[in-house]
Image 1 (cartoon, helix red, strand yellow):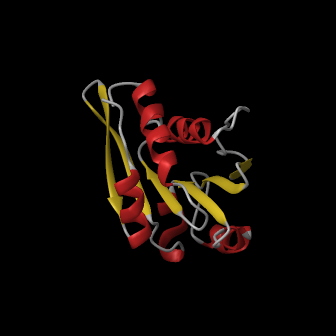
Image 2 (cartoon, one colour):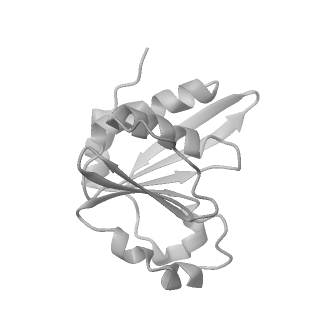
Length: 148
């Protein structure tokens, strides 16, 4: 993933495994491409509107192909108690797709995701590692078809 276009392409490839009830955690430093990945994912699902970083709103909801898709960003959480008081727990259910940037800010209050993507810089290039944490995550990884 040498550039933002490749990061967006990874997001698009992840769209094949999106299903209600699935949770994706995105890890990486500021500017590593987490929101860019979400943009690619949403575009591949058919969303044509603006994809914004939820840094200030904490969550951006999207209705896409009858999916309830929630994009969270917990970067501004100062401690895990903010997760408890946020009311976000109800979003994580069998009818929603939840993508979380900065999940570590909620501490151990968030369950393991189905799939976790870590984005990082290696020299001038972006790189990604993907790790499944559930059977659904394994299926998600299996659905991944990266462009050659």
